[in-house]
Image (cartoon, rainbow, N blue to C red; front, side, top):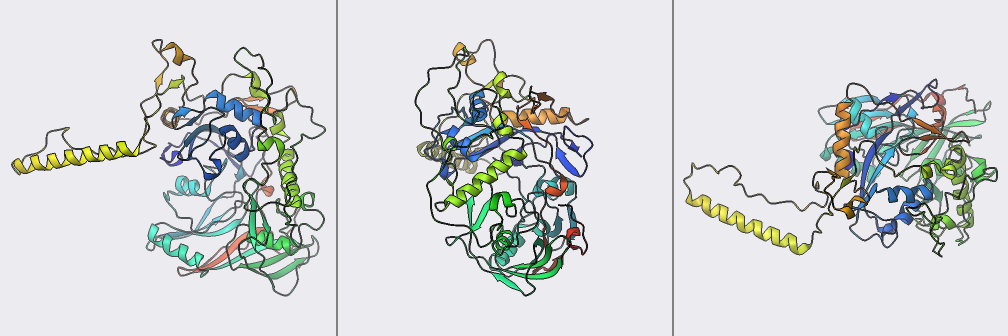
Length: 563
């Protein structure tokens, strides 16, 4: 079962600003909400501890917080409350309850440019800042959910995708048959794609073709580089205009392939990165050359532990180092030698890379991470408020709930059940042949075959009662996906008359704001003009026809850009 599909939409309020600055405009933000998340163990997780996996896959919170959250009981594996040292095995089902704070997006609306009801597809203009699919911290602010909730398109097929920061045209089939056909056109290179970009410097007047192979080297930061082990890629660039007053060029881009960040990385390689690209055009990351000519690809094993900035005075133990966890009495247990997790030593950089990374690549990723931390006021290093709080508990759960672990499903049992069902069906068919043809079965006599579904709903949640066994009362609450979905739906129904208020804020002695529900450090929302880049999908030509949008505002001649 997919929790994101089955969960009732919570009562949320679309806010024009962040929680701390009600006067800001140009943003759309969803009120934070509790959300159940379910996934099966990925190949790269197998044989590794839960806490190691969580702290490596995600960097939004401190390592100390991830341990605290797991110990609070909000994470289950195969329906049983998980322990931090659980070793992932193939087939493990991870369920986690998170308090989702979706990042703000621009208030620019999605536009439906064309709706072909007969052939079953729509053409839209996607604003920059909105991801196509629910990913990371985005769900209701994703294109798929906006089309569903605001326009009533239950299942648009996103056969072509745009980066979150990229704006422009998308063609979305509304049925599987057309989606398959259009996907084949994109894969076979039959679709002519045209983009507009504004890049740094004076781009050459003649056409330029870049055919450098591209490789994703860091999944968390979404970093792609030119690399000999990468996938083939080809882009044609044609200058439209050079604007001397801001030293940028507006160019027409014709990608012949569809690699991740293809136009952005090819322009960077040519020495003309997209002018406001936060990933590929910042000299603090790439130096004065801004990545022109690519980076060194000589493998290196050098790594260093992450360090807090010199100006930051930590309030207590370092939250990015897993100091011994206090026991129930509050006393720290004796210190014991343990193996450090990759995130503590810096070896998480490159863990998921398809090739060994060079020292320059490691340095670039480290700078990107530090810039992200700086933009968030080093909140990950100041993530300590939860230490003075009780266990993390979703407010929608009125009381802790306990569940017996679901029975393990073995292949032998499935065969026995299917054999028994087949025998029962044969007996029923035999009996039906002996009855008069106008006879109707009595209520409750239908033969039902139970589906073997690993995510089938479990027993109904039962609050802890006085009659519960003493040893169970002290166990962590086994919070399952079904509990959260049921109670969230009840809360949404009860609050349908008025949206719920945003969570209250906690302020520490240093002026850091935290959410009172999940204790996440809160930061000022980004400015709308920083949530998109100067890259726009202008025109697509397919078997369905040629479709295009208007030129983006920032591509106009004489457009004033306040850097």
